[in-house]
Image 1: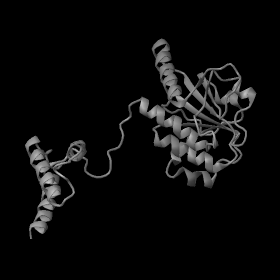
Image 2: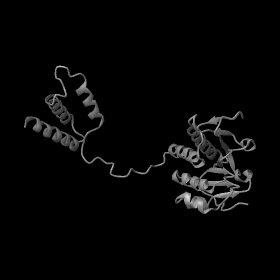
Image 3: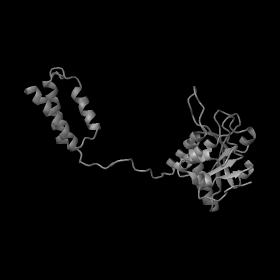
Image 4: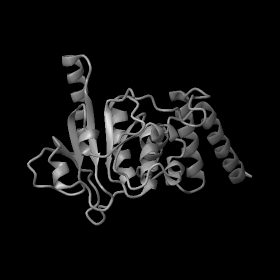
Length: 257
């Protein structure tokens, strides 16, 4: 049985084996759409389609609708040249074991190499196991390499969708995908303060903190040098300099008044 098996442009199949919780399917779809990936393959899911999966997808309904549902791993792996199995623990299977970043590099290398050689690159498959037991030894026998996500030794349990998100993120970053601009205006509104303006500002600070008693001119230590480094790292603009000097002036007026 194959449902909604329409072909997508992506060459990377994220295959979920016998997922027991429909919410994890929805969260997986959301993770893929976040990172511009779209091939979700479900092998014998316990419950799908599901209203809970749709709710957890949070707008990634198209990924769910186009998900391929198969009865067997053989069907899911059709047309795949590279099969990557995910594991939460070290395995003595004599297979190369990569972290997510290395895995993403391997995937991109495979796609590019096959595309050059044959003109149309076959798919790459990443297998994700059951929530409670992972992939079976028989399923791991189908894999060329393994991917393991480094986690805390004290708590290594990783949610299925979170594991998918980690690899999907590495793939997106490797491809140099354009990230959305940060919220707000990131362009500089005022020019940076000039060296002369910064010099006048530091003189203003020094005179003020000497007058307040904070700085002992006979034993200045490294106070002014550290303040210079602090404000130079901040890339202060002219408007900010004017604000700071206004504050210093108000302090001096209080001292002298």
